[in-house]
Image 1 (tube, rainbow, N blue to C red):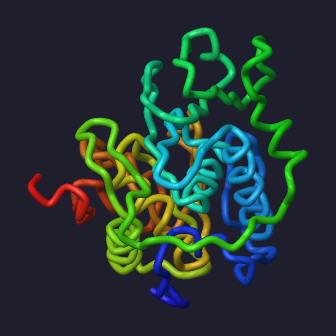
Image 2 (cartoon, rainbow, N blue to C red):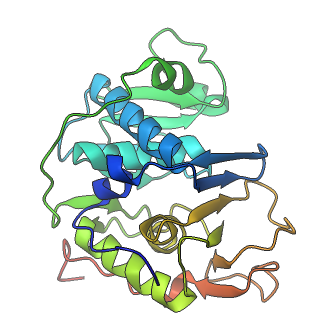
Length: 262
């Protein structure tokens, strides 16, 4: 692993001094790459949209676990705010803001304290926020904020465990070491975002070293020759495709300091 990875919290992944023309997100389905400049700037905008939706420090944001740029950028924007993200498809998630694909808008009937935001298409209801429109029009700056490294930043949808910035970064560093990642690495995400271990190893780890997260969308058989792949526990031997190195989420040492008794 190369590069400075001594970050204290996830907001530092999108610090201003990390902006560059290097690829940060490779969206295979859309045939588009997003640079670190775009990643950082859009994460700031996503954080400002979440603030507009009422999200504050320690609040929870529920994000549909589709491996898409809006989902990951919302996660980073929530981290900037000091909020906790849960990648879940649950339509009655107890969260301050819920971010889902537009094709699922009708499935949500949120309580008064929650706000719905959709991506991938325009909303049909007037009280639903359109992710792309609001993010595009938002201020591309974000005010400096203090973050507690031991505060929760990610929540598991299956075990309901909360993971702090420190927990996630520790697991990401371990994954980057195991996979031999550096700034030239591209990591194919072949495990669900609903698993926090996939987020730590398949998203945070490549960003930590200045590499790229490769989002395959529904094209799980993509033939791209990626540096590494992060796969689910139930993945077959061929799940990594042509990646040179593979890491199963079963081997990601993510433990929760927020739930020490579990």
